[in-house]
Amino acid sequence: MYKHIKHSGRWLISHKDWKANLVFMLGGLAVGLVAVLMAVSSEWANHTFFNMVEKNEYIPFLVSPLGFILIVYLTRKYFPGAEGSGIPQVVATLELGHEKERSILLTIRIATGKVLLCIMGLLSGASIGREGPTVHVGAAIMFSLRRFVRFRLYDMDRVLIIAGGAAGVSAAFNTPLAGIVFAIEELSRSFEVRTRGLMLAAVMMAAITAIAILDNYSYFGEINAVINVKDAVVPVLVCGIVCGVFGGVFSLMLIQGSRWVAPYRSRNPYVVAGLCGLGIAIIGFYSGHLTYGSGYEQAKAIVENTGEIGTDYGYLKLLATVVSYLSGIPGGIFAPSLSAGAGIGAHLAQWLVDYPYGVIVLFAMVGYFSGVVQAPITAFVIVLEMTNQHELVLPLMITAFLAAGVSKSICKNPIYSTLADNFLPDDKKIHGKKN
Image (cartoon, helix red, strand yellow):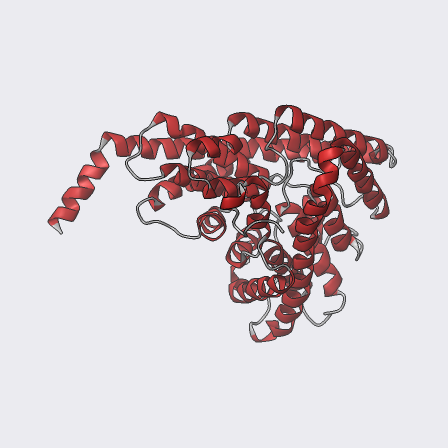
């Protein structure tokens, strides 16, 4: 016992260990500040685009194709590696063992491009979110700090990447616990005792920074959703199965669609981008101009049961998100998936009239999101923290696990690790070589 206390005391006063803690805390602070910047600028971009649509409902048919083409040009010319969500890139770097290989996908240049191009995507009406890009940016920021301290532990670069990604989730959603769970379930698949304090320091500092600037808020506002556990059986089964199916279909469309469009995007990237932009304009026009952007406002309106959202919104949002991703522009799928899940829940609520509307929407959100990412713990913790509905822990958890199981029967491999293979050499692919 004495030896343990003596060793702990030496660890606390060690110059190198204090420097390591300081690096992680300052890194978390930086990630939190960037997350706030992305949150504010994304909201501005969303509102700016919708203001343009209010003035002229046909403007997306011009702005979206041209915007997509410009974004793809800038991505290919100045920011290669910034395309897509960003989480697959982070997952890929964790499979790479050398600093030189990792640094290709985790540079400050890519992080800067990710922020700028994501905002441009929202200004073009793309159905994308800022949360996935925030994970990529967070990992890049933390990884860049490795040069300021020599760590004693093996492969501390990996810990920096995981901590940065987790801090990104924490700050983007204002959900500290979700950031920690995301690090364990989606990134590291384990949680080393030796480094958990450093990761927690980064995650908590990022969350505190975001909360200090943006205030402590519920991401989707307040919701009145209460149900007895015994009465929740039917909603859990319906939402878990139905939303698990749609989540699996979405993932399969994204994975197979990416493979199918890859040769066309390689030969004619700007034609593909323009056609995808046109597709976004068509879907948006048909939806009554609801499917543009991250879907945050629409999801909040559904959750709070305010405003008029059509029953087909969730399915059109799903399609718009697929089209946006296939274009090759930077942008995440977290927020659009939660919005699509809320839309599907609003439709299911019309059939499950004997159950509280808010409960059905929440179960559908967690079910669809879990079906998409196949990370059930992360899914239900994110929704739980975003809506502050702690009374529904058990049914939300069951819905998430049920949906993830159903999704796996449709899409065998998780979406992020599968897409990460696009950034890995054949001998390091997570799911083996392509057929």
